Length: 99
Image (tube, rainbow, N blue to C red):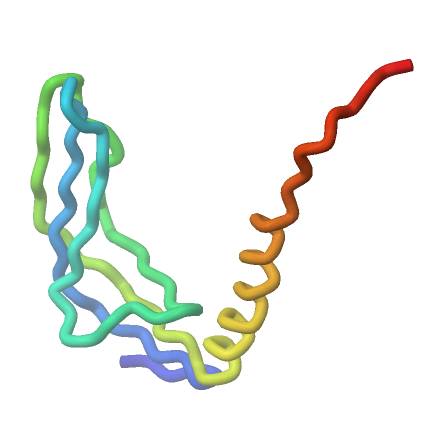
C-alpha cells in the first residue's frame, strides 16, 4: 500500500467477464478484495480485454489497482453526488411551441 494525501493504493486480483450474445451484452469486473468499493475510490484493471466477438463469452483473470479515497475526498464525493442526483429530478413535461 502507498499512502498519499490520505489515499491508499492496493493491488488485488480480479475476474473480468465480457459477453456479447443475442441474450446479453455486458462486461463485469469482480474484485477479489476483502473490502467494499466506496465513493471516491478508483479502480484500474490492468491488461483487460475490451471486446469479444459476437456470440462469445470471455472470462479472464487480471490484476486491478484500487486507489482508496481519503476521508476528505470520500466526503466531497458523497456531497457532490447528492447534487448530481437532484439534476435527474429536474424534468419538465411542458409543451414547447414555436411561433
